[in-house]
Length: 284
Ligand code: PMP
Image (cartoon, rainbow, N blue to C red; front, side, top):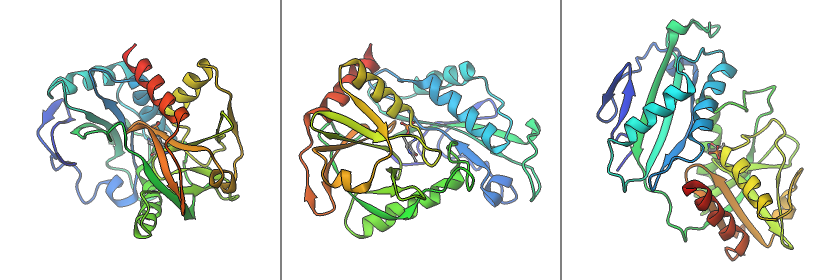
């Protein structure tokens, strides 16, 4: 499998692979005006698919792009597309909008300029026993005055990519990125949690990072299961002394951290519980 595997829906048709659809003069390829979302089909379910479809519309609006798909219509299309795969495949679901024809200065919001596509990839999730190493990134999140950080905008992601690359070059799997004030924000493409003395802590959304749909779901599930979950300002030093650290994101759901800097950590019971609760919710 790879990033160009089937299927892609655009302009009313399903295409095999990666159809050439964006020209060199497209606003999005020139000036970065694209938004996307990421969701999952696995084991016959698509948890929170409606929220992911709504978020891509909200992301478009945040950039001034007029969405052209109703949420329900997009959910239906996703179901139709996933049915084209074998039912045991794990699919990454990526709806996207971009601005096609706007001029250099602005995005007009003209619906004639909006393009939409839905990309579905065969992309296996990490195995249940996967765990990662993390390190502190020298790079920071922009504030909402600098960039539309509440949107999943393509133009934000080269910053995440350079943080990831820098961490990989030092032998780590992922990077913990701080906000402009130096507080912990998130990983390069997932939210971050830690457990200490049986309680769960995670940075409170402050306009510098994505308040992930999986993050919000896991907080709800842990609270309903009786855990205290504190959303608050967090310093990096607290993570260095955590009992457990884990990430949340649509791609792999819940993933424990096995090493932070030079310190080994055991994937622990709270991360395992969060993962079980998520699977129960997904199949309910
Ligand atoms: N932060 C960033 C930067 C992301 O790209 C993602 C993945 N969408 C997340 C957090 C996790 O968000 P979600 O749970 O909505 O996938």
